[in-house]
Image (cartoon, rainbow, N blue to C red; front, side, top):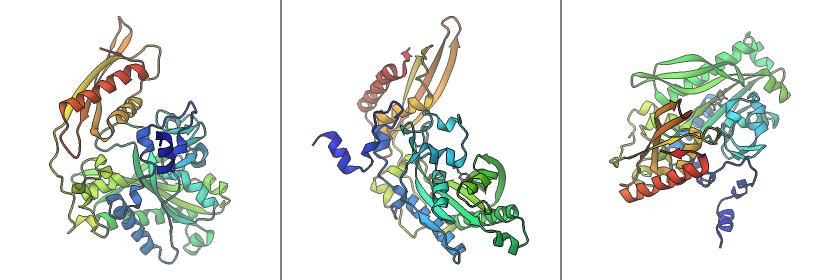
Length: 387
Ligand code: DAH
């Protein structure tokens, strides 16, 4: 059976390989599309999702939330950007930041992409959990695929009238009470603070931070939904709050997981440490992740001149290329030197790659081969001149 047929049988997303010039989905990303880590009940992301859903079930017993966790990650640019008021020309719309299937279709870069369609379909209180995709840098906390949870709660006039509040006051205070409760459900008694933020789809907007191990960490973004989104869903006389959080980020804190690549590991030394039902708020009495021995890193530097008349090279595209070559064996890509030579009118970059497996020791040969492939693809695809 040829490669393409095999793909179609094994992965329902094979049709994302369009020949559209805008298509920038690599094989490596494609292979992640049917993994649905958040649906694995004994996986840390699945465990965390369940714990958050349990909180919402308890808190909203009488006006229950609906949980969505299998909406397709392939969405229109309209859903991903326009429906949540991301302005034209915003950086997140560029193909340097987002994976395009074709000009009008992307791999969602946030679960907010589903807010409007769900509101239009009649949903009023819901959580959406799913995989999201972003072209980004490479380090211990960034991976091009991660998982988010989105929450939306809509109020009707009688809700605020009954409490003699304005609609904004009600949405704002319910938002804060609900999310502070969520943080206590996850972390136990912990110091938290609200920080003003900006999102195009909410006004006002906030981030909630917790004081954890001596530093303030952002755990979620949220706000009162822009009226124009509600108008679009024919809910003009309603109010709503919304929030979005990254599951990996929270799971890394709660379970003490040191590297984001571990979520993708099939190594039993990782997976057997997690069981549905193991979670305890704040980790009190809970067995945290115990790192098995770290394998040695291998550093490789590469220096090159950027082409004067080409815009092909960007740091995200370099990272994408390295991921495509080295998969989960690349731990970090870091710009360590940059200078401009006025005589040549050229800019030089030096990047340091850290190769390390989460599962075994890498051989010199293996790393040299990866590095050779990266070097030659850098020249062929990104128009740079190696130094
Ligand atoms: N979509 C935002 C992100 O990916 C997260 C977010 C922030 C979602 C505020 C929301 C919200 O619904 O109200 O960074």
